[in-house]
Amino acid sequence: MVRRTKEEAQETRNRILDAAEAVFHARGVARPSLADIAEAAGVTRGAIYWHFKNKSDVFAAMCDRVHLPIETLCEPEHIERQEDPLGGVRDICVFVMRQTVRNAQWRRVYEIIFHKCEMVQENGAIFERQRQSHEDGNIKIRDHLRLARERGQLPAELDLDAATQLFHASVHGLLAHWLFAPESFDLDASAERLADGIIDMLRLSPALRRGYVPRPANPIGDQPEASGHGGGTPPQP
Image (cartoon, rainbow, N blue to C red):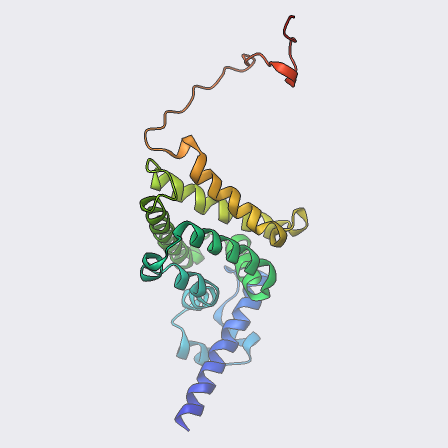
C-alpha cells in the first residue's frame, strides 16, 4: 500500500511537470500562475504545493529532467576517470545537440529556456536559478578542459577561462540558433562536424593561448594589398 502511494505521488508530480512544460512552452514563463499549471494538470493547487514550494521550484524540477543526464556525465568523479577527456567533451557536445533534435521533451524545455523565459521581475528567482546553472556548467566544462590540457590533448598555454567561455557560448549559441530557426541547418547531421569545429578552436586558435596580444585593427579603408589570385594588382613578371 505504501509503495502504491509513493507511485501515485510520483505520477502526480510527473503530471504537474508535464503540464508546466506545456503551459510554459505555450505561454512563456512569466505570465502563467500555479493555478494555470494546476488546471492543465487536472490537480488542485494544494497538490502542487505538496510537491513544490513555488513556480520557481516547478521550473527547476522541469529543467532537471533534461539537465540531470548531462550533469551526471560531467560529475567530477566521472571526469577524472576519463582516459580521453577531450573526447568526452566532444561526446557530450554531440549528445546535447542530437538530443535537442531527437528528444521532443528536451527540445520543448530548451525552447522554454532559450526563447520563452522572460527576464522580468516576476521571474527573478527563476533567473537566479538559470544563472547558477550556467555557472555550474562553466565549472564542469573548465574541469574537462583542464584535464585535457594536463594530458596533452590541448596546448599547455591554453587559457582555460577564455576557452571555457568560448566553448560554452558556442554550444549555447548553436542550440539557440537552431531552436529559433530549425530549417536553417540540420543540427542532427552536423552535430559531429560542429563539435569538431569547436574542439579545433580550442586546439589551434592562438587567441586562446595565455599571453595573447590582440592584433591592432586596420583603419577603415586601409586594407592590406591582396596578392596572388585573390585580387588586387597582379605581380609584374
